[in-house]
Length: 456
Ligand code: GLY
Ligand code: MN
Ligand code: MN
Image (cartoon, rainbow, N blue to C red; front, side, top):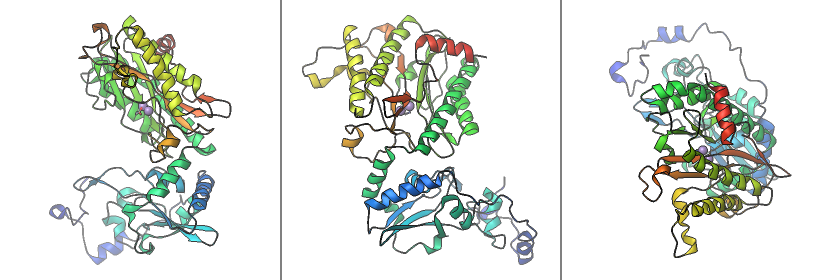
């Protein structure tokens, strides 16, 4: 596409006619849109409830939540837009909505009055309609107007130009508001739980597609990219995108916790660690890991490591319930790993108990909250995040692992180059927990059978 329009940055190649006759002509003879948004999104009542709960915590205070702006990727090209997640939480708006928008909750005598400030789309009589590649309909497609956004969200809308003066958007939401929002976001409402179930189900289907592409990955010089592209393509087809960069780690790369370069080979006889999540249109994401034998069968050494990680995950599941803490969940998994590695004789005697030398092979924690962000609710207080009681509606990961790097001289040669992580997404219920990702097998025999079923 020859972009002739960004006259400021692309003076060198601007060729579009710029005369009144052309302007009048291109602005005429357009039918009215047939796809006007006139009804509330399913998220709208839940977002209203969240605003009410936030309002009650900040009487008399103005609350501002900006969606954020388009970010430049390079020169005149932007990244695909993704809204700030606190804005998404308070408005119920998801994918692509809406660059530059700002939610303002003005204090009233008995709460707050919310207004969503938005850049109105350029009308056909406004030359921005065809000259503005960031906002013009000719460039990015039709955007809902202010009335449509009001219908979708149930929030009054106003043009961005009317945003009250003196608001420094870079400083919002204020720290206390952000902390309160992340505290609220720890417990998911019914609508959010359904979004997460959808994200998990789409992710499981993506893992199945990857198994079908394994032979092609093994043949390819950058087989990890085949894995990544398969999963990421699936995420775009079935949801909005991936919720974080896909980790497609074969062989020793599985021992690199956030291996996202994904340019390695996928070799028969090695393990593939796939850590990936589909983010659905509402922006909720799954975060699942399975570690599978590329040739369909775990070797004895791979199974030995796998079994310990699975036992650790099972121990974490066994303590997870309302009232327990993420620290309890983590410690249950760590106790298993410490015990087994000590039995193997690879953990040296420590001078102090707190040295926890076995953690050389498991340097991350076992759990994090999951929701609109893959590492959700990061601004919640540490004492509630790690040490607060789990409550029904919370969703978090259980993801122990063991990582024996190829150059790790502290372990026997047979273990070097083996990395295993098993990661599931867990909903706290009234009685205990539900493993949302249980449809994806975890047991090594079941994984081998699942691979046969989904191979092509
Ligand atoms: N995928 C990042 C994580 O598991 O936390
Ligand atoms: Mn995770
Ligand atoms: Mn993960």
